[in-house]
Length: 125
Image (cartoon, rainbow, N blue to C red; front, side, top):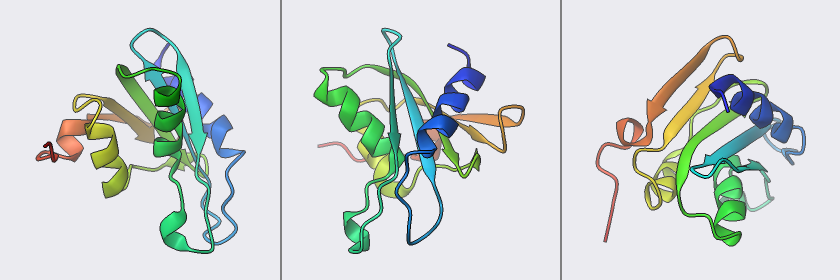
């Protein structure tokens, strides 16, 4: 799967976002090392701390299906660039510190970073 295809899936996933407070709809598409794709979207809550980000939603779906090996994740916010928040970076680091993170202002302007670039000193027990 190409980065563009994965990004398109993240844009599609954002259509299901529940974002009545911020209006910022985020979608994520997570590619496993065995080629499966799991999507997620942000789900806001009146208690802001209970909000679930798209990235964690996609990873929780994959993990609940037994997946633990991840290749890449594409993230889009309102159809454009959206990079993971600190909580999501640490959450993803638990499973794949070299995960490729794909985002950008549309599928023709994508940027790719490794998770270890975005979170250089991730926490491990």
